[in-house]
Length: 318
Image (cartoon, rainbow, N blue to C red; front, side):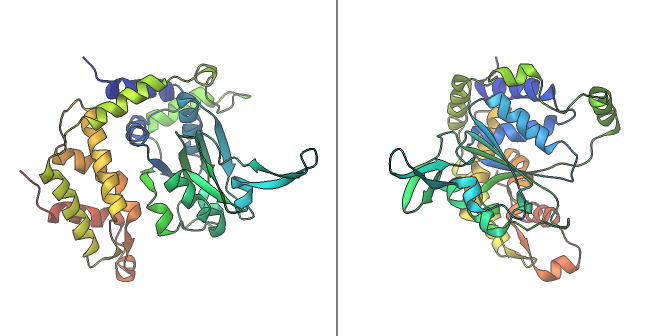
């Protein structure tokens, strides 16, 4: 008998699998973030289907959906909103921007300037924004799905560490396998066929609020032994003391790792978190939070390589 968590993933795999091809692992990671109420950063070269994947996910989740295209001239007021004078009421009225949505797709977020990027910090952490000394609440299910091109692409602004830390997961997209790319050409290669989610996915939400609530309750019921919490803290401590890093895993990052491991255990039908569940979540939660030392960058070391050393270095609880 499948659990609500497993039913949720199967629903998303069916819904998104009809639009994007060969991304079962990515959809699995997205399921983890949705259940844990975490924001998602999707990184990859242009043309790999990041936007299509995000739009399809938003359609499957339902609720209001807004999209922001990152550009160098985008201002914070363009996404948060502004006060305008209402002549009929003889007062200034707040007109909310696209940030006020259940699912926000911020496409090519690292093409927006640092000031606009920073405007998301309060929204992502506290699910509210402050405008002219007043606080405005965002929808309860507020979810940011941001896409970015690799940082060495021209015209991009690297996201600050404080903002990267607010993304629960970073999913790296690579070029698809040949058979999957052939399937994409066959499905979308006809003249006049756009890369939009199918009508069935956009007409109504496929993930009901009841299913999502049950999946989250199932994840909360997964037991975490004190030794596993200690293992996560040992990983965080080792990253903070690593000679090839200038910034290790924060407390927020350790909490995200615990939540992701708990959901990963629930998705495989387990009642408790194992060290393997933590290791499954690590490549999604940790690398984008690490800042390499200048010597490590010169040597060509990557965040994933350092993460592997951390996994090998920290003893696993028995």
